[in-house]
Length: 560
Image 1 (spheres, one colour):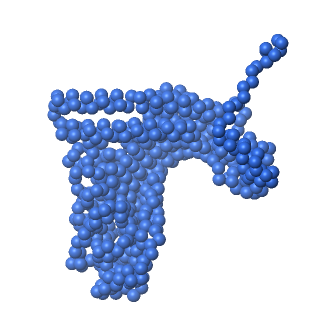
Image 2 (cartoon, helix red, strand yellow; image 1 turned 45 degrees about the horizontal axis):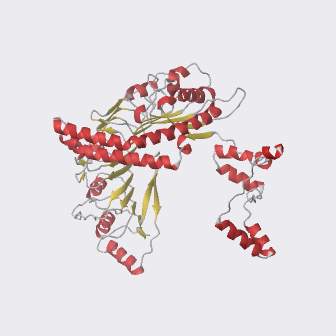
Image 3 (tube, one colour; image 1 turned 120 degrees about the horizontal axis):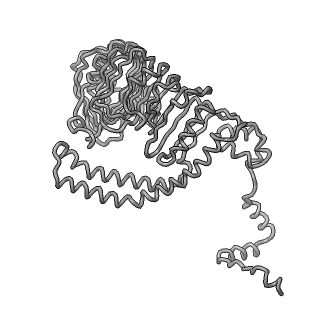
């Protein structure tokens, strides 16, 4: 009796109606059909392991390092498969965050954008004088926004704490293993949150550079920035760092450290860059590539670089609100690229080796954080090309809802320019300024123009037939996004007539894919397949050839 009382009670599982109907159907079915269904619905069969070893090795080579290591627990066969030795690792905290976090983050960003839009009229109209009523109105808007996002902020912080606890365990196990563990790490990327996790980040940076000898290191700190002093690594013997990328991690007082002196590539993003470009280039004697990205705040004084002893070859200024950029002295500079929402005036000094220039500006209607007189201004091409050294290739991307380039002749001719690529030209822009640019390049050999057809408005073609200019060296004209409208045909006809040595005119429909890491070489044309009707094709070709008096016998027109 005691045994029966001590025995736990057993409860029968209550079946759902669908379970009963399924069981009844299986019992009523013939045996052969029941066996066949069980084979078809067998989900425990490992079909992947039935593949030969050669196929499995190819699959493993396509996986990242973390997934490849995880496959070793499947079976002894997977454990003994040869694997490619991984030397590049990426630890991102975003991989641990659930989709709900990103949805809440998007709502938080939308609420912030709405608050900024409501605040902008008060900021732009009362920049100099402060009105008391407007001050209280702004305060009420801010209080409403704070009450709205408070629950979102609390939920986001809970998700971040949960993800960081798991992230710390994972990175500690990888970068801080027991003694005797040997691992080769050439490239490492850490994406983490800041705030109270500062002590862990300090240990990770030291272990990655000093213990494992990482050559390519990237640290991306989300949220509040943290500082790291690279001077503490000067006494280490295993320093092999060549490339360093920092997001929200200012290297305070570290520019004269031995770690920075060995760098060949440096990228400072967001709050990591706090000025002192001349000091950085002076101490980083081996630096070849330098990038400044996403710097907050508008700087009317601009960026001034004057380092005659620098060996810098590539300079990138990406999404930084510098009103002016002065390249006073960089004797070894070969490539300069600038990209952002605000056009920066460029002043070229002693840069005799400069050969490649890329300018990418997206000018919007206005910016509440920028002086309205600056944000609503139009610019002639001379503001970006005045006294430019003898460059060989030029990449331009001037974008915006309205035309902000003045069609004024360039005073300083581009005597050595051979390749011109103008991408993402809005279809509602008048392209007369492109003709003025062609007039300033007497030895131009190749011209590529990409037209963005996403706008509903259409540009009009100004009459440039009176321009008696000859492009004697131009041999190739490529127009991407060509849809045979009148002003496009007029532009192509004008260039064909003025180019006696033209060999190839390629007109195609397509778009341009941009690589954010490579501003100059990162533009790739992706053609679209367009079926031209034979009558339409012949009509376009007749319009291009009609009455031009083209004297080039080698000219070939390709219409795709």
